[in-house]
Image (cartoon, rainbow, N blue to C red):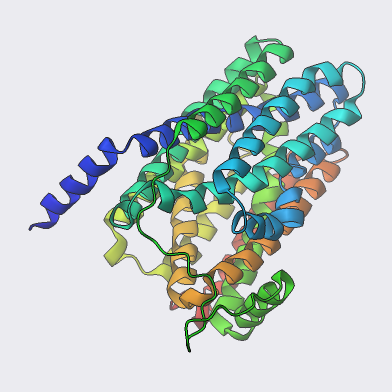
Length: 415
């Protein structure tokens, strides 16, 4: 059978899979709600307080729960019904965002609490989605199913951020958060409508090699410690992780600065939505290019080059005053970001043994999300008393300088 015929059969198999259709459709709607929330929350805080620091704080609250509860959420999902956890997370998020405009009229402090709790619920949903997928599609269709979900995510970023900017601008706050709550309700209903057939996979757990007996599962802390030890001992992974930390520091700082740039220079949330959509367009282009040119791309060069281009694009965000030029800059930024992240992820996936991948990724995720939150908070605080231009230039340097150093480090450059 030819490769084309095999791919056609896989595509037809997914199209006939009602559970997968429900999952993709529900998550497409839900992710549109996520984009809406990422615009609506900072907009509400900015409109009410006018404080750059407060705006940065609410954005950081979307990341902090991943650092605090990410490992716990992954462990919980391995022990209970994944779909039940995801439905509970959706219902919780719907109730929380529905309460935002009502509570904001009484106390802005509650908005920060609700943003934090909404993100806490998302921490339990996101890993659940990836863990649930093998129960929805057979193993032979997993690669294509992941591709469809990834493409759906990029499309929601392109459409969702642009639409969110206009929705927030033209609709009242109460209506905006009601729409957001409705998207989570749709996701919960589609999950409940799924039948989740088994595909014959035995849940062997930590079966012992001799005699097939189950060994006692190590503690969560012991697993995390083992992953960190492997990561730190491996020179290439250690350098790659340090570079990734530098990336998220700059990306985290840039996010609130780009929001404030949209508010101060352009027409507010509409411009911010277009800016985020432009980055998503570029990311999709970069992802597709990497897929087409995969065998010709040198991962080390792509990492160094992508990081350098991102740094330059950050620095150009201030001098490119016309919005169309800024959007073009953001498309290039997104493209470089896609090339960079795919190269970094591929290197880690190909380097870490299968038995340690989850733990190593967990450690990296905790480190990067923690630094991202610090970057968001620091940029929001500095933007209170400093001009945006120099801060955007610093963001560019945070990315460009490590890339310049990495160009002379063989374990990064030559992978």
